Image (cartoon, rainbow over all chains, first blue to last red; front, side, top):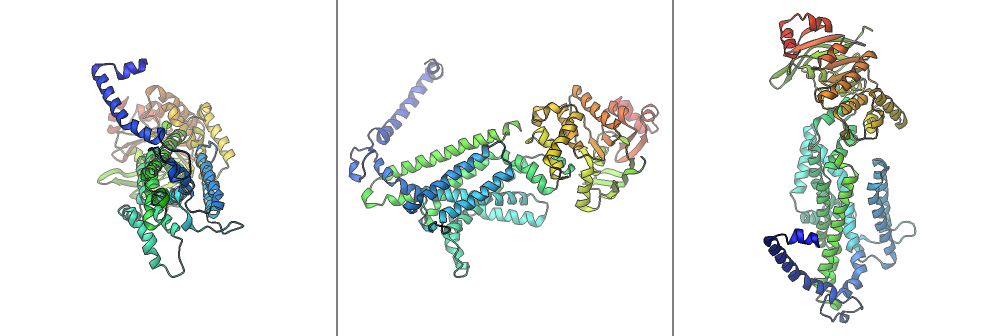
Length: 343
Length: 244
């Protein structure tokens, strides 16, 4: 109570401002909360169960599985769950104090191969699931994580290459970065899905998802490279000299001395790019893939559930927001854990 | 005792249009302790930095432990493994603990096992009198402690020669002594040292020979007693008047 008096009502001006902001909040939020929570419909299984005038969450609940798994066969969805759990475990690797970088990288690489085989199947007793059936949140995560994991090594090499003293390396890296950064992601995806097959010989069809993944990762790689280059520029010359004086060569200097510091400097920038990529994956809709937003949009046209666009989009916004916010919290934790404050 | 481990012959070095070294000759024998001094801009740091290939020379020759530094990257990297260097700004790796700073190059550059490197690290941390700081990060230490860690880091490579580039210039006055003491102890152990410094106390305490540089040239070379008490050149006299 005293906090309220001191901070919100300490003077006439403050009181007026507080009242005004309070009024605006109430004016905007009360109807929304009423629509979304108080008079919303939660139970039931059909469109006709929604008759209170509030939000029809029945639709979201009924369609939840499809939003998450797309058209992935119901009997095989446990495979997606396993991959999801693995991903969370892999993320916690960042926080295990005694895991060496090499081991963590190896775990990531193995986990990714494992995930790809588990999701596609066709080996051992697992039935084959075409990537065309992948969709919903699962596809969004596959595109983001897969794209990032492929983009990261590319980005590191490009960032180093752009600062190289060899003119040919420097020029080609710069050209590559500028080319991919100068083109909209939509164009990249179109090229990957429509143009690329024209250049490939018949029968050498590369999976459409894989093509999109490569496009996304090269695109993200160019952006990440510039973020990482920013970090490299913050490293003082003395660090290079000290490493050189100790007999460390170029790659060892970069691996053990320069990159660890540079990457720590740019965690906020990296996260920025990661979040942007996560949301940009919604663009795969235009090459006929149904990511999380795409599948919600598609289901809005369902004859049984017409007129529920608000519910669909609010749900999509909520999920996107909570994932991006969690990522942002995660990056703060990583920053603290990696000891940025000590540097 | 007397075979030369560092041979600098007619070395010239230009930075753009500025000539840093104008034909320097210097020979250092094994176990000798050399102090290089001179006014700022005289080329003394450049000279030391040329000795492990941090700067490339424009003409002349530098031979370290019978290896010619002009022999490309492999020669330079070979030389660097036997030549330790301590910088004015310490240049410790801030993302690594003191112990990791010390172990990095022995494991990655010399191929020591993690265990052997750690043992070595503790040995040299004791030598610089701060074994209790092994688990800390560099920026948690005082300047004097950081510089002593930097000395230990160089020693962990068990070099034959140690180069010091103004090791006390970035330190608060009350921390200079702890670093000077450590360097003087090294000097007593018979390692070959080349030290650029303004710290005349250090020069008196450890030097076998003082090399006075001005405008990229060696003006005078003499043992400390002769250098301080009976300098030959006028330029040296002028310099000594200003700093003593």
